[in-house]
Amino acid sequence: MKLIVGLGNPGLIYAGNRHNIGFTVLKSLAVSLKIVFKREFSASSLVAKGKIFEEDLVLAMPQTFMNLSGSAVKALLKKFKIPPEKLLVVCDDLDLELGRIKIRPAGSSGGHRGLKSIIEQIGTQDFNRLRIGISRPNKGREITDFVLSGFTRSEKGQVKEAVEKAVECCRFWAEKGVTETMNIYNKKFCNSKEGDKSNE
Image 1: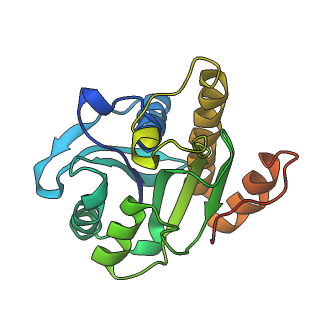
Image 2 (image 1 turned 30 degrees about the horizontal axis):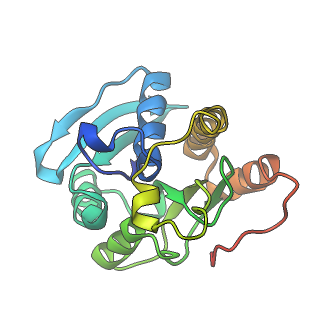
């Protein structure tokens, strides 16, 4: 069994904003697998269960707000008896350009508060994470305001493509694991601008 967790903030006020792209990916992934989210009170999450390539799969969207995501993830791992190496966390990343995706088997939080909370709560950095680029704001704009804002009309095409790529990547990870997924997706969707500022 594997667990894929999308990070975001609950509530309509946050729906579709940059910080919630993890939720957006999980919702699209659930649609592709024809499974439905139900509230799992014991883990403070919305949870959907299914199968992919004969692998039992749990999708989850913590309802704890981003900065407290770790408590929900810890409860999910315990409830479903899943080790951290079979966890994939999907989240936004300021240091990747808009629309780029990157998967890694481990690493620091890179300043992302949701990842930081998970690392603190489960006691390890050794879990998979799929980061989706949202770029950084223009100089002078507050980071908090930027990540809680929606995508502009001109950005929405790139975001739609990124979500589709991320769903495909999640499905491939569930079947093949992180090493093969990295070899294909980190190269396949890396555009002409080499490198990023991420410390992972």
